[in-house]
Image 1: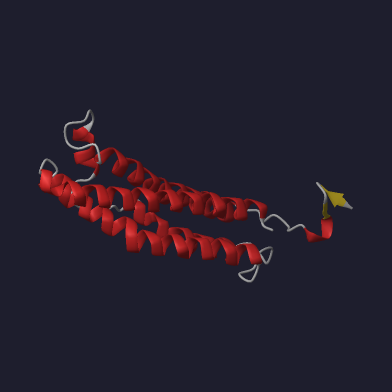
Image 2 (image 1 turned 180 degrees about the vertical axis):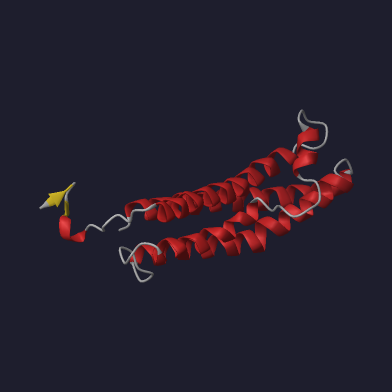
Length: 171
């Protein structure tokens, strides 16, 4: 028997139950929030390049106010909840499944890029925007940080889309 061109023997049984459903909703929500904040940081970095005289500069000052971007750190809950989903799947899914390994590899790559490039760049932007945004001498540092954060955020958005495709398709 085939279903949508795939043999029924290759299809996974879909886990059921309120615990699994709750874990799935949280897993997806924290992925969307974590990656969404990283994408938003990239967009705001591009806007910050225009300087303090632009429309919406006060909003950028608030966005880049000094402090830890805790919403972005929800990214770290994604694999924790993913392993919870595996454990609660009653054997339907396994950590050795290729799609699980691919999803985890995409997540690890994303976390490393966020830790090495986005969040340190965001901290530097916080300092520039809060202390010396109007200083012409800070212009080169501002442009460099804005570009680095924006490009890395775009890459992370691509990795998120790839991870969603892998999680949905389960190849």
